[in-house]
Image (cartoon, rainbow, N blue to C red; front, side, top):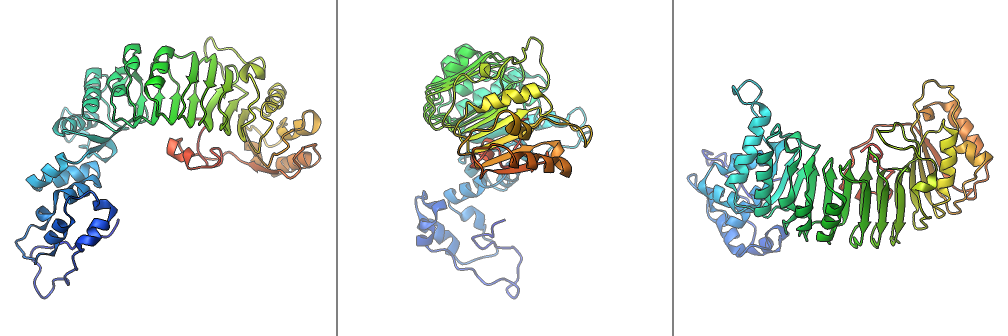
Length: 471
């Protein structure tokens, strides 16, 4: 924790034990501090802090409003709630400070201590009271463990309040069940909203057509119901969108992202039949991430900055009802993507048929510099015979990437030294066009949860231990 910038008076301290007075900051130093540049009168701050101390002084209430607001904005939800009860002035400062409400910071009574009230109900009641008592704006509204257990009208009332109170970030993490199918349309009309993450909600065609979130830069929809027409309306109504994540979204057989001229990151995760992923006229798009099964037709045009693509899922571990197994790779990829430098593929090394599809797929990425393979096989014994990239590179389809610099192979078999040595020998005898390419064999390891901030911080999104494939 950062050391206090100003002296704190302790009531009852005798003269012989009192610490030496700390010089008060000058008006100039306060005015130059970026935290207080918006203050109307830096001299007022310095004056309040420079007056002689007295044991009966209430130094906190003497601080200017802008400083009290700054202090409260840096406290967690529970800390701020405990602080504002100390004085009317602190409460007034809290009401003038944008609300930050994160349920991970809310205290909850232990089960059984409050009869007839479950912890999840108590937490939801605290959230309701906080929203009702604060006039806004709302800087942060994040829920990851609050449940209304099907009380959908209450959830929808929260959405209306958040829109009316000029929310900037709304995040429903881990798909809280309380808002299952709650209508989240009001949030799409909030002009101040910058980040929106919805789980198990519903967006109607009518609400999407009225989308006017001009400030929205990040949108994540997880297990949310939305039609293809509604998705197009949302994209049209959010022209500043830089990141779009669609995770197991219901109601879409085709995902079409068109004329999103600010979009930098697109994430697509799906577990049911998806016929088409189309990206066109996305001049700023740099990354297309997710678990893109190749039984969907994938078309990318007008995305000259797209450099990272994956995971392309060649081997589908199981099919859902009505889902068709991919008959060939090029149903998946309609045309080569020359701009991609980083590619990640998930494949069963033990399937010769799938490995042949991989070698065909690589022809669609002629300018690869970095190639990641992740095996979907499960090792049942150290001596199991695997068909690998090394085998195919030597025997059938030499990798033709003339600029390939790095290749990583992740498999449970990488823990077996004999197997790794055999693969290294095969690669050394192969006809790789890029003879200087570094090849790394790596075992399967625990990975961090996917976040937009996490992948944006990496030059190679597949090289930072983030769980992209299983997100």
